[in-house]
Image 1 (cartoon, rainbow, N blue to C red):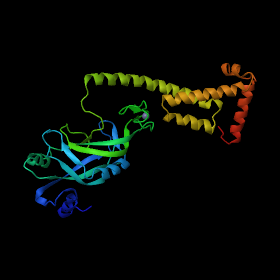
Image 2 (cartoon, rainbow, N blue to C red):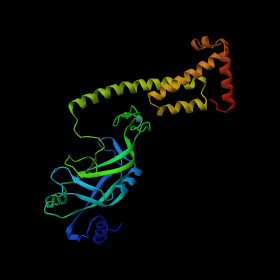
Image 3 (cartoon, helix red, strand yellow):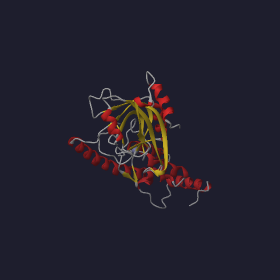
Image 4 (cartoon, protein in one colour):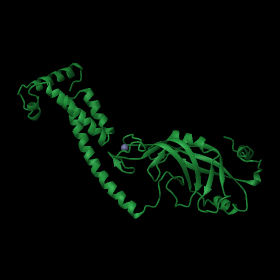
Length: 308
Ligand SMILES: [Zn+2]
């Protein structure tokens, strides 16, 4: 990417009504967003960064600290996805960020603002974009279409839940915001996340956390139950595949599978006369038809070479 002033001026003049000279404009760089998990527990996918690289070209920025800043706007005229191989994200990927070059036409009104940017005071950038996918790191559900019970920031079997944002369809705006410095890159985004919570919201969040705790425990118990049902007919490769797939299922999916397994088990049982007795009292050596059935099942498994 060319970096000399003449080239930059040529590129930004694509967005102006008349040709500007270098002394008439103020140029600055900013980081719009990155692939690190932010304070809302979200991160952008590589694909999302690449989509936004295209969408943010030409987008105007605003300065939300000053409501009278009508003429204090800046415009992005060039963007680039940068990979910083020396740094890794919390998920162990190379750190990538969306860098932008922006310009402002110098006026008396924005002289102070330009000084603030030069002094590094205006570091926080917030972006607004439309994302249609918010993929749960635990179960892979798109939370925007089918909410799952996993809470961002909480640990599930040792892995912290976060969401990957993708399906970016629009980039509305970007703005400098007056918020405290953030952990990574001095960048924030506005995806509905707010930094300050009302007391009512905090209470509701605590109640929701408690309810989700209970749901997690019930779901785990249900999953164990379903896994037992999966292996009910023997430890076949098919049963193992089905049992393994339960790790990605939420409570609804598990209930549905449990129902199917129970119906299947019942149909199987009805085939043999003494099935009900056998299921309730699975004693050794009763020689029921159900056991004979089971024997066939196991024989079949051995033939498949799936030895213990
Ligand atoms: Zn989930």
